[in-house]
Length: 126
Image (cartoon, rainbow, N blue to C red; front, top):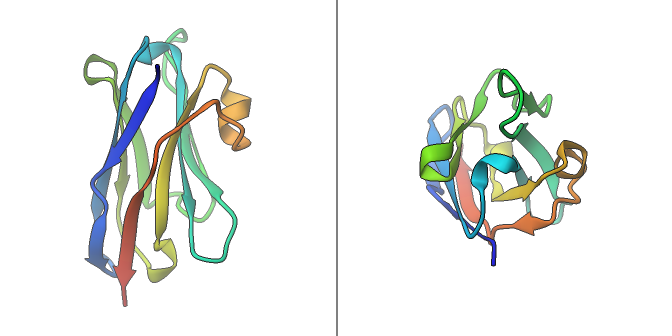
């Protein structure tokens, strides 16, 4: 059974940084496109970033406009882990952050991925 476990959330001041991790277990991690989503109170879950799976000459990362230039997604296939490095954090980045996985990039980016973690809370104070 596939399991995703996020960690690294917490309370940080505006302008600060955090690195989220998502550890995967249960199957071949490198075969999956990975993504990060977030959901703020009273709002719908939204796409943050995704990174493609192995199989091409390079990994491709995609970002929501709201985080472009501030967040970086990366993966370590040897550790079965995907990361989200978050910088220049703003109060509006406050949300529960979820990682997601699927073999389909389109399903990940559209929020219809087959696997989801339970989330980690990120709170940015002003």
